[in-house]
Amino acid sequence: MESLVLGLFVLVLIVCVAAGVPTAYALVVGLALFCVYAWRVGNSPRRVAAMCWHGIRPIRRILGMLLAAGVLTGLWRASGVIPAIVAYTVPLITPSLFVVMTFLLSCLVSVLTGTSFGTAATMGAICISIAASMDVPLVLAGGAALSGAFFGDRWSPISTSALLVASITGTEFYRNLHNMLRTVAVPTIATCLVFLVAGMLVPASGGSADTVEALRGAFDLNPIVLAPPALVFLLALLRVDILLVLVAGIVSAVPLCIGVQGMGLLEVARTAVLGFAAPSPETSALAGGGVASMVSAFGIVCITSTYAGIFEETDLLRGVEGAVGAFAARVSPFAATLGIAVLASAISCNQTLAIMLTHQLSRDLAESAGEHALDLEDSVVLVAGLVPWSIAGGVPLASMGAPVESMALAVFLYAVPLWRLVRERLSA
Image (cartoon, rainbow, N blue to C red; front, side, top):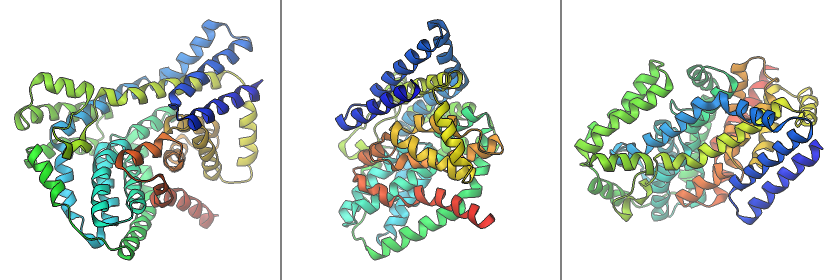
């Protein structure tokens, strides 16, 4: 029965992807299938509901952080934080260094915002627009922007995926960020070199003055608007509780919205809930954020967390876990986790479910919870962005206007797991 249930779930996912139906519907169907399975193998409806709650209970905190992150990104757009970052950094994009600067600037924005989607919709969209005007191949510029967007999605003091990994593995968030530094230096340098050479082989022309002028016309970009990200990173360096860091980022942005950008209290509240509404077509790439932007992610995390509770207390994954154990016996723990991540990302169609499935199937492979968290960050968090039919990589590319083929040139997403495999081979 287990194989039938899992097979039906995969089939529903495939049909939804092929038909262009949001994968959230497939996840709801999957929840129904798994609940029916748990009931058929002898659990009462009340017990099945308890299993679902047991899956959600450990990640209640992350759900609150998701909503807080949505409010933060909305207010940072409206207060001028993100427009200022873009306006101050875009002029640094010189023609000969365009591709590598696209990567580095996307890294910067993604670390400051903690979201690949937000980075793609702001800095990514702007860089792609500039690439079009400079006659730079969009597939190359898109690969650089996607690489940078996932840099902060993996490593940022306010990254929701990093928060999720810390929550499900029971590890300390800041310790995980520190551990991730061990495996990121060489891949980052290698990525910069690749994009540097690629940019020199495809010289660009033109400029970005129009983009900056549009931002300066729509916002007051007084340097004081950079206070919230400075405060966030100061608190992060002091290892303040991450929820308090998010709250500080929100609270510090409110006076800027009112005093610098001239917004009213009702408008600030609306932005916190519904997101920022761009004042002109030239700044439309900055629209978004707010609680509304996190509703889909909130629902996906809730649904996939119920899966974890059912998987934990039934034999639904026992056959798969046996196959994983046999595979892991032949390779290293990270190689096994990476293989699981590829499969999970291919069938889940979103990063959250891929992380949950990979954790569920590989949690006993690493020597410690900290190493397991690092394995997840170096595998599934990045691999999810390389699946063309997954929202993890597809949505950022679509929002920035880059072709899906850009995934093939998202060098950083390949470099990190490949470097981990090389390190293990060298140390063997």
